[in-house]
Image (cartoon, one colour):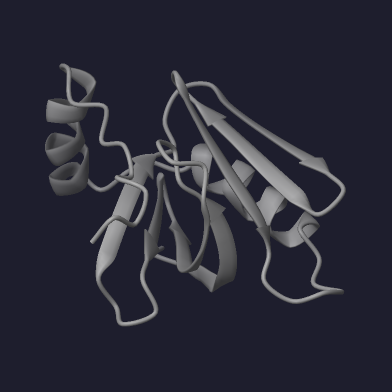
Length: 118
């Protein structure tokens, strides 16, 4: 079965360290994030070892050599549902077409978010 979990979080850009408001979608084997206008800014396959931690208002997702950082978009929002669904997603299988697309990333392209420079 296909499912998605979506909402708004702040994501810290991997290069510039800025916190940007992003629409975040978690689906089986994948987390992706988008600008408010719908432009996709990045994605990461949730394959292999995935570590998810919550510290205060920050959620850290370590996948492969990447560290993705998120914060709640509104005071009082909970991060536990995000942690739980990301861990669930990591146990799911990525659809074959998407897995093939990310094979390129594993071969050398780190797929890093460019920090919202556009």
